Structure formats: structure tokens, C-alpha cells
Image (cartoon, rainbow, N blue to C red):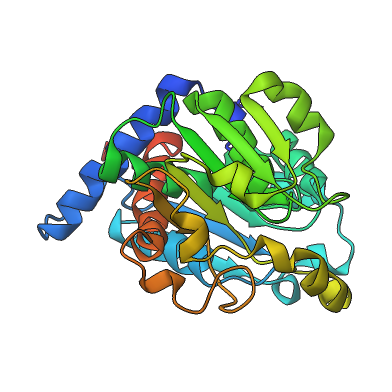
Length: 307
């Protein structure tokens, strides 16, 4: 079987490769803004498997493939035999014989690793219960555009130690920054990611301790998909972790605020926070498109040349 490059985690690339993908994302954004047609993936097809619903992931990958000259096929659990119990490995063997890359948004991270192990084309993690690496590419591209290199800077993560938080931990390793995570007891990020990061990551209980002097502050919804029955409990527990303007005032004067969206205004952020001039959430959301186009260009071979 051909050994394809996969992107299941930020650790699948070297730090140098990641930075070059971000720089390329900025270049591709400029090409698009100038209306330049650039279609290196003409006749290439991306399969997109969604076990979890999505707005930004679907639109950005689908639009991105089309803009690069290729096409994308959307598959929900109703559209594949995966939802009816076909082994992931069988599905991967067949689908990868017809497609040029596969993006999967799923629950169990093992779905991705098993699919990738049996795929002869690149597999991209569009989100799993463990990680959300494509979102981190967008976040890191946004920081690079607005403030330059994030190396040596301080980042604060406020709220749940979820898949986004785990990916921020991997980003701290790969992009070489300090990460402070403020979360309630019992909601820490996965211990295996913390162990990997060593002293780059600090867990604190008070959000103020996390944001003091921070150059980037990020948060996410308190209740992720699949946890809806915990909503009431989480609302109470996480109330002190709301990011508002007063909290941001403790950060560095040039702090950027990010949120991977969708946002629940009045919960993890104050009602007015996305309108604060320190918030770059809209630029960050748009950069999903540009960073992922750079990733697709990096992973997918250019189109066949005519004989």
C-alpha cells in the first residue's frame, strides 16, 4: 500500500512544515482576494465523511476544493455503509481507491487512525473527540497575520479541557509557546497530551491567573456535541470562566481573542465580546478556508498530466 501523508494531529507534521502551511495559507488568501485563478487540484476529489454535524468544516473544505479546481463529496452517516456497521477498514480500502483525499469529522479518534491505516490517500482530521487540528491551523494563521510569530508568546485557554484544548497543547509544542489552561477541577485536558507538553503547559483554576499578560486568549462552548445532558451542571460549574472585556483587560495590551465558533453569547463569552476590537473570531473563521486549502495543496498530489 502506498504510504500517504495523513493529518490527524498537529504532530503529523514537523514544526517547519506547519509554518510553511500557514505561510502558504496567507499566500492563497491573497490570491483569492486578488481574484487570481489557481487550480492545482483540478480533477482531484475530496471525500468528506461527517458523523458530527458542521458548518465551518463543511463549507471551508467544500469551497476550498472547488477553489483549488477540484471537487468535494459530502457523506453523512445516512449516505454510507459506515452508519450500518461496515468495518472502517473495508470502507477505507474502497473509498481511498476512488478518492484523492478523505476528510473525516467523527466522535472516536480511533475511527480516524483505523481509516488512515487502511487508506492509500491522505486522511484529514476534521474534528474528533480528541483533537481539532484544522482549527488550530486557522488560529495560528490568524495570529501570524496579525502579530507575527507566536514563538515564545503566552496563550491562555479558558474553559473545558476538550478537543480544542488538546490541540492547543499540541500547538504549544509545535509552535513553541507557553500555554496556561484555566478549567474547573475534573475538566482538565487529556493527561497524555499534558505529559507530552511538559512545562510548556500550566493548569490553573482562576481564569485571571491564565490571562495575565497573555498575547492570545481562546475559549470554546462549555458543552460540546454529545454532552447535552450535562448542560445544566456545566453552566453552573463554568460560570466563573466566562471571558469578558474585564478579563481581557488583564492580558497583554495587544492581546487577540479567538473563539472557534459557534459561540454561545452570555455563556462562555459575554454578550459583547465578539464585537470587541481585540476579537479576531471572524478572521479566524475565514482562515479555516485558507489554511485548509494550503493543507490540501500540501497533502494531495497535483492533477494528472495529459499523456
